[in-house]
Image 1 (tube, rainbow over the protein chains, first blue to last red):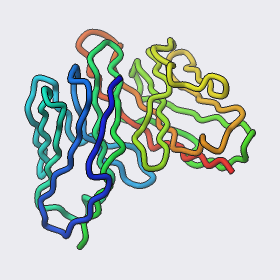
Image 2: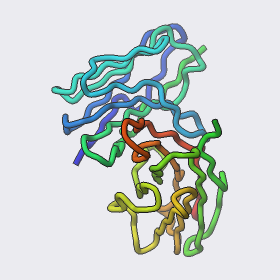
Image 3: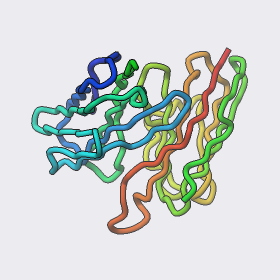
Image 4: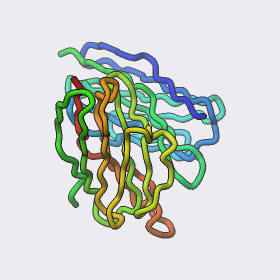
Length: 113
Length: 118
Protein backbone atom coordinates (compact mmCIF):
# COMPACT_ATOMS: atom_id res chain seq x y z
CA UNK A 1 0.00 0.00 0.00
CA UNK A 2 1.37 3.38 -1.05
CA UNK A 3 2.17 5.82 1.74
CA UNK A 4 3.07 9.46 1.19
CA UNK A 5 4.85 11.60 3.78
CA UNK A 6 5.43 15.34 3.68
CA UNK A 7 7.98 17.22 5.72
CA UNK A 8 7.75 19.71 7.32
CA UNK A 9 4.10 19.81 8.42
CA UNK A 10 4.29 23.58 8.77
CA UNK A 11 6.74 26.23 7.65
CA UNK A 12 6.93 29.96 8.23
CA UNK A 13 9.35 32.11 6.22
CA UNK A 14 9.88 35.82 5.58
CA UNK A 15 8.94 37.19 2.20
CA UNK A 16 11.58 36.80 -0.48
CA UNK A 17 13.11 33.58 0.80
CA UNK A 18 13.58 30.52 -1.36
CA UNK A 19 12.17 27.36 0.17
CA UNK A 20 11.91 23.62 -0.36
CA UNK A 21 9.03 21.32 0.51
CA UNK A 22 9.67 17.59 0.72
CA UNK A 23 7.60 14.58 -0.21
CA UNK A 24 8.48 10.90 0.09
CA UNK A 25 6.59 7.80 -1.02
CA UNK A 26 7.04 4.13 -0.27
CA UNK A 27 6.23 2.41 -3.58
CA UNK A 28 8.30 3.54 -6.54
CA UNK A 29 5.89 1.98 -9.05
CA UNK A 30 4.20 5.26 -9.80
CA UNK A 31 2.60 6.69 -12.91
CA UNK A 32 3.07 10.33 -11.99
CA UNK A 33 3.39 12.70 -9.03
CA UNK A 34 1.49 15.91 -8.59
CA UNK A 35 1.81 18.95 -6.36
CA UNK A 36 -1.40 20.74 -5.36
CA UNK A 37 -2.14 23.96 -3.55
CA UNK A 38 -5.09 24.23 -1.14
CA UNK A 39 -6.36 27.54 0.19
CA UNK A 40 -8.66 27.61 3.25
CA UNK A 41 -12.22 26.75 2.27
CA UNK A 42 -11.24 26.03 -1.30
CA UNK A 43 -10.67 22.96 -3.41
CA UNK A 44 -7.34 21.77 -4.72
CA UNK A 45 -5.45 23.55 -7.46
CA UNK A 46 -2.93 21.54 -9.44
CA UNK A 47 0.48 23.24 -9.58
CA UNK A 48 2.80 20.78 -11.29
CA UNK A 49 2.56 17.22 -12.58
CA UNK A 50 5.67 15.12 -13.18
CA UNK A 51 5.40 11.94 -15.21
CA UNK A 52 7.37 8.94 -13.89
CA UNK A 53 9.79 9.26 -16.81
CA UNK A 54 10.57 12.91 -16.02
CA UNK A 55 13.00 14.38 -13.53
CA UNK A 56 11.50 17.83 -13.06
CA UNK A 57 8.87 20.34 -14.09
CA UNK A 58 8.90 24.12 -13.82
CA UNK A 59 6.14 26.71 -13.76
CA UNK A 60 7.09 30.29 -13.02
CA UNK A 61 8.68 30.43 -9.58
CA UNK A 62 7.90 26.78 -8.90
CA UNK A 63 10.14 23.83 -9.67
CA UNK A 64 9.30 20.24 -8.78
CA UNK A 65 11.76 17.37 -8.97
CA UNK A 66 11.22 13.64 -8.88
CA UNK A 67 13.63 10.86 -7.91
CA UNK A 68 11.52 7.77 -8.39
CA UNK A 69 14.20 5.29 -7.34
CA UNK A 70 14.61 6.90 -3.93
CA UNK A 71 10.91 7.69 -3.56
CA UNK A 72 11.36 11.44 -3.18
CA UNK A 73 10.07 14.66 -4.66
CA UNK A 74 10.75 18.27 -3.79
CA UNK A 75 8.87 21.46 -4.54
CA UNK A 76 11.10 24.51 -4.75
CA UNK A 77 9.50 27.94 -4.44
CA UNK A 78 11.71 30.87 -5.41
CA UNK A 79 11.36 34.37 -4.00
CA UNK A 80 8.36 33.54 -1.85
CA UNK A 81 5.46 36.01 -1.55
CA UNK A 82 2.66 36.36 1.03
CA UNK A 83 0.25 35.15 -1.67
CA UNK A 84 2.06 31.81 -1.63
CA UNK A 85 0.66 31.15 1.85
CA UNK A 86 -1.41 27.96 1.59
CA UNK A 87 -1.23 24.24 2.21
CA UNK A 88 0.81 22.31 -0.34
CA UNK A 89 -0.13 18.70 -0.98
CA UNK A 90 1.88 16.02 -2.74
CA UNK A 91 -0.06 13.22 -4.45
CA UNK A 92 1.20 10.06 -6.08
CA UNK A 93 -0.66 8.31 -8.89
CA UNK A 94 0.19 4.64 -8.68
CA UNK A 95 0.67 2.47 -11.73
CA UNK A 96 -2.45 0.66 -12.81
CA UNK A 97 -5.59 1.29 -14.73
CA UNK A 98 -7.52 3.10 -11.99
CA UNK A 99 -5.34 6.24 -11.88
CA UNK A 100 -5.91 6.83 -8.17
CA UNK A 101 -4.14 9.47 -6.12
CA UNK A 102 -2.60 8.91 -2.69
CA UNK A 103 -2.04 12.18 -0.86
CA UNK A 104 0.39 13.28 1.81
CA UNK A 105 -0.82 15.29 4.79
CA UNK A 106 0.49 18.52 3.36
CA UNK A 107 2.82 21.32 4.38
CA UNK A 108 1.15 24.48 5.66
CA UNK A 109 3.22 27.42 4.41
CA UNK A 110 3.04 30.93 5.81
CA UNK A 111 5.01 33.68 4.08
CA UNK A 112 5.36 36.70 6.33
CA UNK A 113 5.37 40.18 4.80
CA UNK B 1 -15.48 25.49 -19.11
CA UNK B 2 -17.44 25.11 -15.87
CA UNK B 3 -15.65 23.38 -13.04
CA UNK B 4 -16.79 20.66 -10.67
CA UNK B 5 -19.81 21.84 -8.67
CA UNK B 6 -20.63 20.66 -5.17
CA UNK B 7 -23.45 21.44 -2.78
CA UNK B 8 -24.02 22.29 -0.08
CA UNK B 9 -20.79 24.08 0.78
CA UNK B 10 -21.36 23.72 4.51
CA UNK B 11 -23.50 21.42 6.63
CA UNK B 12 -23.91 21.09 10.38
CA UNK B 13 -25.81 18.10 11.76
CA UNK B 14 -26.11 16.19 15.00
CA UNK B 15 -24.74 12.70 15.37
CA UNK B 16 -27.05 9.92 14.21
CA UNK B 17 -28.66 12.23 11.66
CA UNK B 18 -28.33 11.62 7.93
CA UNK B 19 -26.80 13.91 5.31
CA UNK B 20 -26.33 13.91 1.55
CA UNK B 21 -23.82 15.69 -0.67
CA UNK B 22 -24.16 16.35 -4.37
CA UNK B 23 -21.53 16.62 -7.10
CA UNK B 24 -21.82 17.70 -10.71
CA UNK B 25 -18.64 16.84 -12.61
CA UNK B 26 -17.18 18.58 -15.62
CA UNK B 27 -19.17 17.71 -18.74
CA UNK B 28 -17.79 14.68 -20.55
CA UNK B 29 -15.65 13.45 -17.68
CA UNK B 30 -16.03 9.69 -17.34
CA UNK B 31 -14.44 9.23 -13.93
CA UNK B 32 -15.69 10.69 -10.67
CA UNK B 33 -14.02 10.48 -7.24
CA UNK B 34 -15.21 11.22 -3.72
CA UNK B 35 -12.55 12.04 -1.11
CA UNK B 36 -12.74 12.63 2.64
CA UNK B 37 -10.31 15.18 4.07
CA UNK B 38 -10.09 15.30 7.85
CA UNK B 39 -8.56 18.46 9.32
CA UNK B 40 -4.77 18.35 9.14
CA UNK B 41 -4.70 15.37 6.77
CA UNK B 42 -4.58 14.86 3.03
CA UNK B 43 -7.64 13.74 1.08
CA UNK B 44 -8.44 10.04 1.29
CA UNK B 45 -10.26 8.31 -1.56
CA UNK B 46 -13.67 6.95 -0.58
CA UNK B 47 -15.07 5.78 -3.90
CA UNK B 48 -14.26 5.97 -7.61
CA UNK B 49 -16.82 5.71 -10.41
CA UNK B 50 -16.18 5.26 -14.11
CA UNK B 51 -19.30 6.25 -16.00
CA UNK B 52 -22.02 4.79 -13.75
CA UNK B 53 -20.02 1.80 -12.49
CA UNK B 54 -17.98 1.55 -9.28
CA UNK B 55 -14.24 1.07 -9.87
CA UNK B 56 -13.17 1.04 -6.23
CA UNK B 57 -15.11 1.46 -2.99
CA UNK B 58 -12.69 -0.43 -0.75
CA UNK B 59 -12.26 2.52 1.63
CA UNK B 60 -15.93 3.44 1.86
CA UNK B 61 -17.44 2.58 5.28
CA UNK B 62 -20.37 0.77 3.76
CA UNK B 63 -22.25 0.36 7.03
CA UNK B 64 -23.01 4.08 7.01
CA UNK B 65 -21.82 5.56 3.72
CA UNK B 66 -23.40 5.07 0.31
CA UNK B 67 -22.85 6.67 -3.05
CA UNK B 68 -24.37 6.55 -6.48
CA UNK B 69 -23.74 8.13 -9.84
CA UNK B 70 -26.90 8.77 -11.75
CA UNK B 71 -26.72 8.04 -15.50
CA UNK B 72 -22.95 8.40 -15.34
CA UNK B 73 -23.13 12.13 -14.62
CA UNK B 74 -24.10 13.62 -11.22
CA UNK B 75 -23.27 11.81 -8.00
CA UNK B 76 -24.55 11.82 -4.43
CA UNK B 77 -22.74 10.68 -1.30
CA UNK B 78 -24.85 9.87 1.74
CA UNK B 79 -24.00 9.27 5.38
CA UNK B 80 -26.56 7.58 7.60
CA UNK B 81 -26.23 7.72 10.56
CA UNK B 82 -23.44 10.27 10.99
CA UNK B 83 -20.78 9.96 13.68
CA UNK B 84 -18.60 12.64 15.25
CA UNK B 85 -15.57 11.29 13.37
CA UNK B 86 -17.29 11.97 10.03
CA UNK B 87 -16.59 15.69 10.49
CA UNK B 88 -14.45 16.53 7.49
CA UNK B 89 -14.40 18.18 4.08
CA UNK B 90 -15.84 15.97 1.35
CA UNK B 91 -14.22 16.64 -2.01
CA UNK B 92 -15.50 15.56 -5.38
CA UNK B 93 -13.18 15.33 -8.37
CA UNK B 94 -13.69 14.38 -11.99
CA UNK B 95 -11.39 13.28 -14.79
CA UNK B 96 -11.65 12.55 -18.48
CA UNK B 97 -9.94 9.21 -17.75
CA UNK B 98 -11.92 6.30 -19.15
CA UNK B 99 -13.66 8.31 -21.87
CA UNK B 100 -11.55 6.82 -24.62
CA UNK B 101 -8.02 6.31 -25.88
CA UNK B 102 -5.42 8.91 -25.08
CA UNK B 103 -7.50 11.01 -22.71
CA UNK B 104 -5.94 12.80 -19.76
CA UNK B 105 -6.02 11.36 -16.27
CA UNK B 106 -5.82 14.79 -14.61
CA UNK B 107 -8.31 15.19 -11.77
CA UNK B 108 -10.21 18.44 -11.30
CA UNK B 109 -11.47 19.17 -7.82
CA UNK B 110 -14.62 20.89 -6.62
CA UNK B 111 -14.63 23.34 -3.67
CA UNK B 112 -15.77 20.66 -1.22
CA UNK B 113 -18.50 20.35 1.39
CA UNK B 114 -17.48 21.01 4.99
CA UNK B 115 -19.43 18.71 7.31
CA UNK B 116 -19.57 19.30 11.06
CA UNK B 117 -21.15 16.60 13.19
CA UNK B 118 -22.10 17.74 16.71
